[in-house]
Structures are given as structure tokens and as C-alpha cells.
Length: 338
Ligand code: UT7
Image (cartoon, rainbow, N blue to C red):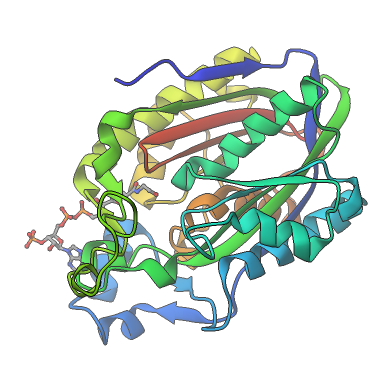
């Protein structure tokens, strides 16, 4: 299955999350609202996915708007200014424009004048890929403080001709500022992997060089989100525990050492299967899919921000987090929360 993941372990710690921020649009979209456009039901969506509602951004709001709000909150939380950022990375599957990078808009809006900016495309795993990259840059001395935002307005790329994917996604953004921390704190391990053999499983078929967007592709729903749900489901149920176990091994920890598990929120059944397979004790898993659905690259930073606000993630806790998504990609990390 795929190539070997890039693995970075940081036995002495040294890089951690200094600040977090999250923003969710106000408009909550119910299953009844979706049922006006699709042949679906509250019962099907709840039992098959665990989702109860999701948020959609207002028509005038784009991905960078959510990203900037989350980034400002993360900077304030870290007690840093935008001018102190060296890198601004935006992980998104729903950029403002195909190019240039949404991160450039974020950089300009923040006034992060000294920062290099680029987008990172690893779909739902993008935010954790960004964490892995920033850790490497900081340890290599190429970055002091870096921003990684996961931001999505997936409501703009829904395929309304496909009820099995249309009900899953929502909008939101979460951001973190990374920087140096004391030895033994922060990121204890992080890994990222890809299996390009699964490229077609989660895809927007048109709108790129392989199939340029035309009126016909739009009509056929090809400029939108497509997923082979059953195959992704089977893959994720296997991949999430594997990635989690490897991250724990790299960190020199066991499942019982983990205070909080924050998995990617794609389907409650995938989360439950992973929790059972890993043997994570009851009450140690963060779940917010019922409120937001799948917000792709924003899932994990939004989850971290909320878990901390609710007192579920505290200084000294050991955190395990795993993401997976289009590519197919996956990533996992263990952190000693500061
Ligand atoms: O974040 C990126 C990673 N993404 C994921 O991890 C998603 C992984 N996949 C999944 O979560 C699930 O495969 C889905 C939620 C997408 C679909 O659930 P499923 O249990 O795999 O359903 P299915 O696609 O096998 O469809 C079962 C039935 C079908 O009807 P028949 O053929 O049995 O009559 C579908 O037409 O459910 C029907 N169906 C629906 N019915 C009502 C599919 N979507 C809906 C719907 N409302 N929204």
C-alpha cells in the first residue's frame, strides 16, 4: 500500500503549537433544508454518518475570509504579531481561486510582510501535513514562527446530483501558530503519507489541465466533489489505527498514555471503529462531526481549539491526532500539549 511515509520524530521536543484559532460560519444547515434539494432523510444521515447539521458560509464569504479570521485569533492566542511570521501556509481543498495561493491573500490581509506564503494541497490531511512541514522548517532553522491554517468553503463545490457526498461537508477554518518550545514539550512525533494509487477516489474531476471546466462539465456536476465513499471508508478504517500506532511508537508512548484523541471527522462510524481498534478508553475522543460535518483541512485545528476551550485539552496532556483524505493522504501526530 503506497510508499513509505515521511517520518519526523522529535525526541527532545522543541517545536509546538503556540496559539490556536477557529471560526465557523453562523448559518447552520439542517437535514430538512438539504432534503428540499436532495432525496435524503434525517435518519439516513444521522445513522450513516453521525452528522446532525453543518455550517455554510454566506454567499459573499470565501475561504480566505474564514482563514484570515482564524489566523488572527491564533496570532492573538499566541501573543504574536503577523510581522513575526516567517511562513504562512494555507491547507485547503476549496481555494479562493485555482491560483494564486489563498495563502497569499491571507498573508496580505494579516500584514505578514516578512512571510513566505503558499497553499498546501493534501485535502483533509493538509493541516497536519503543514504541521509536519513547519516542524521541519523550524528545526532546520528556516523558520522561527509559522502559521498553518486549514480553511474550507466546501459548500461551493458540492455535487448536488450526488446525495451520498452532498450531505457530508461543511465550511469552517482553524489555524495554529507554531514555534520553538521547551525540550520535551510540543510535537513528539509526526508522520505524513500518501498512496497515489487512490488518486481517483476523492476528486474534483473537472477544472484542471486534465479536464478544463466547460459549461458541459458544470452541467454534468464534474466541477464538484466526487468520492468513492465505500472504498475510502474501508481504507480509512484500516489506515487510521495504523497511522496512530506508528505515531505513538515514534513518540515512545502507548495508547493508555493518551489524554485526548482528535481524529479527522469524516464519519462517526470510522471514528468509532478506530477507537475500538486502538483501544482508546471511553471519554478520550473528541467528536464534533454532529455539528459541522466534514470540514476537511479545518477539522483538526477546529477540534483542538474547541477541545481546549471546553477544558478537554490542557497543558501537560498528551494528544494523539490523525487525519486522512484525498490523494489518498494521511498524517498523524503526538503532542505534549503546552
Ligand atoms: O474526508 C475525506 C474522507 N472521506 C471519508 O472518509 C468518507 C468515507 N465514506 C463514508 O463515510 C460513507 O461511505 C458514506 C457516508 C459516503 C456513504 O455511506 P455508505 O454506508 O457507504 O452508503 P452507500 O454509499 O453504500 O449507500 C447505501 C445506500 C444506497 O442505496 P441502495 O443502493 O442501498 O438502495 C445509497 O443510494 O444509501 C443510499 N444513500 C442515501 N440515502 C439517503 C446514499 N446517500 C444517501 C443519502 N440519503 N444522503
